[in-house]
Amino acid sequence: MIYMTDKELFNELSYKRKNVYENLSEQEYKEMFELCDEYREFLDEGKTERECVEKSIKMAELHGFKNINSVKQLKTGDKVYKINRNKNILLAVIGSEDIKNGVNLVGAHIDSPRLDLKQNPLYESNDMALLKTHYYGGIKKYQWTAIPLAMHGVIFTKEGKKVTLNIGENDPVFCVTDLLPHLAKDQMTKKMIDGIEGENLNILIGGMPVKSEDVSEKVKFAILKHLNEKYGITERDFLSAEIEIVPAFKAKNVGLDESFVGAYGQDDRVCAFTTLKGIFAVENPKKTALAILVDKEEIGSTGNTGMLSAFFEMTLAEILEKINGNCTITDYNTTIENSACLSSDVGAAVDPNYESVYEKRNAAFAGCGMVLMKYTGARGKSESSDASAEFVYEIGKILDDNGVIWQTSELGKVDQGGGGTIAQYVANLNMDVIDCGVPVLSMHAPFEVTAKSDVYMAYKSYVAFYNNR
Ligand code: MN
Ligand code: MN
Image (cartoon, protein in one colour):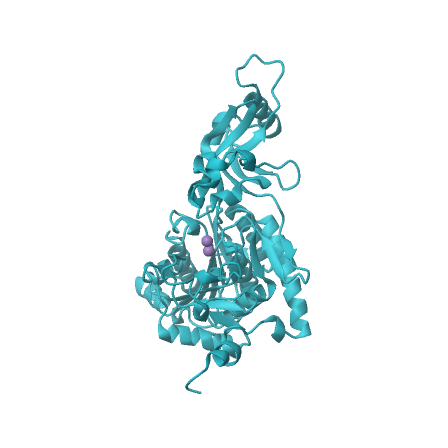
């Protein structure tokens, strides 16, 4: 059919609005709910990039993956992983074809927006002890006040002992206080972006002064005493610490029908989790299957654990060398140019409360499947790698042939904003890449929402890609 009416476009011929739930068999329903139960556990155990890497290693080892550092040679069917600075991990299943025919890579990020402690965070004010923070990634600051928060991270003692902190997942928790409405006349008339200031995102950590000590800041002193007795840390140890303040609540089922998952950090741990499950489902692939989980996407993929670091290239070279005994620049280049990547990151699902920011012919709907995004970017596709027609066709066909329900979208109306992902940095390596992933509601909020059916379809997409490209 050459011409489609809007009704046909939306209801019949297009992938748009094909509700996944309506199209699942009983067996698939079961698989979907089981997958999402495991997904919620993954979210609860992985609230920082370090925790996600730790959890990924545990899961990978259960599936027969070995640390590549302990392996001298690689052959067909071998499963290995490589860790980068505890925040970034690459997994590989070696294929039966010559690796120079290219690899199939799926990449997701495991950092999420949050509040980081400053280097000199602890102070006392008005008989309370508080911690200064510097937010990480694109947050709406008002969303982070008056909710229970937890503290996760690492801190080194003066003697060099690494202490892992994970406080607040049960009791006690922490919080950022907000102004009572009775006294918020000035605050409430401000623009939303100025309503809460970054320097006011201070964490309440204590309020009980020491009785005996002759010190001026008795509450602060009591907190330091507690930290020292329990963890052996002193105030100066905060200087080198990486401590992340994240929502304290656990992942939940949302809706009477439990059709959604609500949780912190689903951007982009929903794609990280489904990518892991995807590569675990791959046995003896033709092309070598790779999965990379990166850090720092939310602040521009920078740093030595972000997608812009050489970690991916170095690890691919190491894999080539361990398969072939050496890795020439030509072999490496041939491998890269024949490779393909799914940059698996979340999309924006149409929010019934804010329909006007979406252009609904080109928007993703929660519950309507994995979303394929030819391009992202902002202000005229800036910062987008824009997948080629050839590659979009190739991936679309793989998804169709394997019963994946999918949809296409851009991030929102053309002039409304936009965003980027790791895709552009993968494309720079001279590899085909397209963005795809799970549509999310309330993206970057402390409690993000995804449809279970979309989580399931993302998983199926990655399995289809690994096994069929
Ligand atoms: Mn993301
Ligand atoms: Mn994001």
